[in-house]
Amino acid sequence: LNLSFLQEPATVDYDVDNTVISLALEGLGNWAQTVSIPETLKRNLVRMLFPTLRYLGNSSIGVKRSAMATLTRFAIHGSYKNVGDLLRCNMDYILDSVVERLKAVTLFPSIPLVLSAVIESADLYELDDVPKDLLPFLNDIV
Image (cartoon, rainbow, N blue to C red; front, side, top):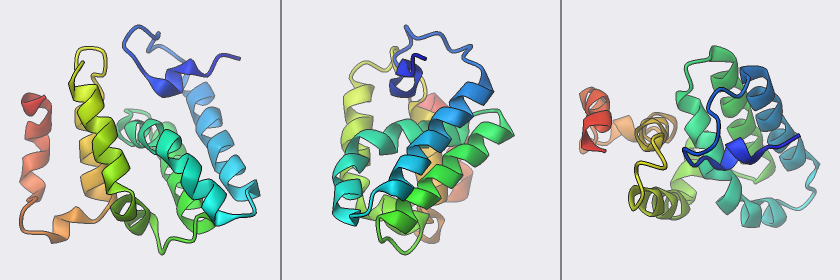
């Protein structure tokens, strides 16, 4: 089973079955749950956060739920308070991933979805700097 679709580029076939995507995301969550040392999980989050976040914007409710369940398990087993805390504490890694992908935005068309997911999931709406009505314009920015 080839799971390269979790890492993205546009050269990957985007018609991957939603069930396979959900199972792959659940597999990441299972791995997070079996890691007995939170520091080990935290070291590996750098590679797993962005691919998981990009599926929060998926059109399939099942895929979205799997992505959120996986992020929740990352938070719980990484000793974070909640998903928002997980994202806020790892914002530097997330932003690095976004910046790298912006350099080749045509290969990474899910950037607006990831930004939307981060804003929503990290509870950034509480900040006056990120009003909720800006989300529809993220697609236009990128």
